[in-house]
Structure formats: structure tokens, C-alpha cells
Length: 368
Ligand code: NAD
Ligand code: DAU
Image (cartoon, rainbow, N blue to C red; front, side):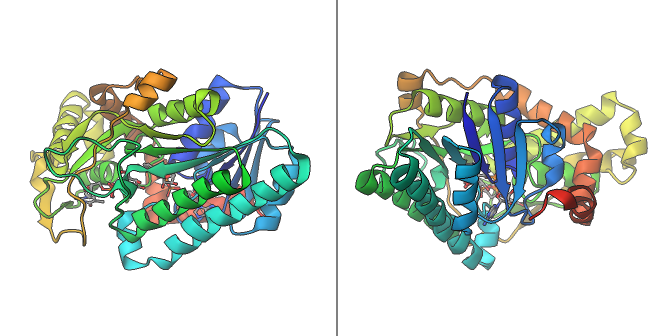
């Protein structure tokens, strides 16, 4: 039985990881450490909050003493480190938080792990660092996808901060012998994704009749992976990965942004055609006026330094860990849209900011 500290577990992927892990390993202890920034939402953990072996701690990864205390108190043997500032646009407008959390915060986690696991107990342990394909930079149309051996070339403050954190994690293994693994994953989508990211933003904007902003010409390419398949990849790295190893996790699923947006528009039109009730629930949606969702598509100014193409070569993961994504894009995108339609209160609360009040009312007792 494992005792796992999940940083950033109230965010998108961290929360999905918590749900995944509870389903797969119900006897394991999970301790979530999360600062509840704008991206952290306790509603994401509502379904697990009453389990005996689940603990939520409201706190910052910059607080090394707090992390050390948690590692000791819960006899943690595994850290899965998701906590980060994750949105590229925000890193362009305000890089400081990215340097603080992603670099200094990761270093604080490493120092705590070293203190407790190496200087202290000497127990067998794992520090798994969750990183991104963006550290490798941008691909030309005919370039091969990113392999683990691809040179780092980060282009945004976000990806540069993640690259720096990857190097720190690597160095703590090489210098001190900390038992680390790193995964670099492509774009995730699925339940609980904050609606500032492309896919949930498009769904919410269609339902509320807002423009669908396409940066630049919309020909930028991303490699999309359903979030559970990322969680499964991390599980395999934890169970079968080589200590000190780096693993690229991806979906072999490249789409241009405009293709993705048009696909979602088509699926939303289809939903409104088969489910009459949607018109009553979403009276502002373009379909109510006989318009197509795609009528909302609006080309806007490009993101500064916008990377053109990302794609992951997951051959190492496949060969060494037996990793194969289970969700096809056709089914994953439908599941995601269905989740958004079934969980309207979740995204409404995020949109109007009331998810922050909700947090004070329901989780006051759990906050530091
Ligand atoms: P997210 O922004 O949805 O969630 C981040 C979480 O971290 C939030 O709950 C937030 O409150 C918490 N957090 C932020 N700063 C903190 C701090 N200083 N101390 C404690 N908690 C803090 O992010 P996400 O999309 O779930 O991404 C999770 C991780 O996966 C990140 O490290 C990101 O770089 C990586 N990643 C994301 C994607 C993707 O497509 N979203 C792809 C590859 C890798
Ligand atoms: O590749 C992995 C990365 O994927 C993660 O490391 C990041 O944490 C995650 O945010 C994501 O980064 P992107 O910048 O690729 O994701 P985003 O959803 O912000 O944008 C996807 C693409 O869509 C990108 O080319 C920019 C474009 N876009 C995005 C938004 C929000 C638009 O055209 N319009 C938009 O409104």
C-alpha cells in the first residue's frame, strides 16, 4: 500500500489523478497539497473528500516546512508533483508567479524530499515530476515528434519555468540520489479543465453565445490526450519506470486548432438537434436562433511567441512500460462535452467566480 502526496490535486489533471488512483488503488492513502490558486477548485475533489484515507491540505509548495511535516506525518513514500502555474497566456502577461511556483516551488519540494527521505528516514521513495512537451519548443510541419532525447528549447515563460524545474529534478537525482522520474506530456483534455483552456472555453462559449477566439490563422497543431490516459501513463511510470528516467506521454493525435474548434462546433450542433431540452437550458446558444455554433468563430490577434506544432513520440513509454492510450479522440471529445453538459453548475460557478465563495463555505474547516 502506498502513501502518496499529490501536489496541485485540486487542479485539472491532479484531481483526475486523485479520482483515477482511488478507482485503481482504493486502499492507498492520498494527501493533496494545494494552494487553491484561481485554478484550484475543491469541487473537483467533492467525490473523495469523505474517504478515511484521503486528506486535503490547503497550503503552498513554497512552504518547505509544511511539506516536510506532511511527508513525516503521513509517512509518504511517493510524491506526484502536479502543482504549477499552467496557462501559457497568463505566463506571457505575468511571468513572476510561474518562476515562483514552477521553479522555486519545485525546488522547495525537492529540498523537503531530500531532507525527509535522504537525510532522515532513508526509506525507499519516489518523486515523480509532471512536466510538459512544451519544454522541447516548436516543431516544423515535417519534423519528427518530440522524443526524450530531443534538446530542450522552451519558448514561453511557462515552458521555460517547466524546463528549469525538470533540470532541478534531474539534478537532485544525479547529485543527491533522490529517486525521481519525470513525464513530459502533450495537451490534456477532459473533466474539470479550467475554461481558460481551448476545449472547455469553446464549449462554454457556445453555450453562452460568446465569440470562439482563434489565435492567428488557427493552423497551430497540438497533440491531444484524454486526461485519464495521462494518469494511466503516470501510474505506469511509477510502477515500472526506471529511477532517473524521463518518459514522453502522448496521444499520437495531432489536430490544428481550427479543426478542433470546428469539430466541437459540429458536435454541439448535433447535441442541440437530438436534445430539445438544451434549447430551454441554454437560450442564448446560437442553435436556438437557427444558427450554427461555427458562426461564433472569430480570428483574433495571435499569442506572442505562439509555438506552431507539438507532437509526442511515445515509443519509449510503449516499449518499456506497455503504455497505450485507451480513449480515442472521437469518444474522448464526446465524453468531455457530455461532462460539460452534465456539470453546468461546475462551470457556471467558475465563470461567475462563486466557486471561490463555495470554497470558503464548504472547506473552511480544512483550510490552513
Ligand atoms: P491547473 O492549472 O489546472 O492546476 C494547477 C493546480 O496547482 C491548482 O489546483 C492550483 O491551485 C495548484 N497550485 C498552483 N500553485 C501552487 C502552489 N504554489 N502551491 C500549491 N499548489 C499550487 O494545471 P493542470 O492543467 O492540471 O496541470 C497540472 C500539471 O501538469 C502542471 O505541472 C502542468 O505543467 C502539467 N501539464 C499540463 C498539461 C495540460 O494539458 N494541462 C499537459 C502536460 C503537463
Ligand atoms: O502541451 C502541453 C500544454 O498544453 C501544457 O503544458 C499546458 O499547461 C496547457 O495549458 C496546454 O498549453 P496550450 O497553450 O497548448 O493550451 P491552450 O488550451 O491554452 O491552447 C491550445 C491551443 O489553442 C494553442 O495553440 C493556443 C490556441 N488557443 C487557445 C485559447 C485559450 C486559441 O486559439 N484560442 C484560445 O482562446
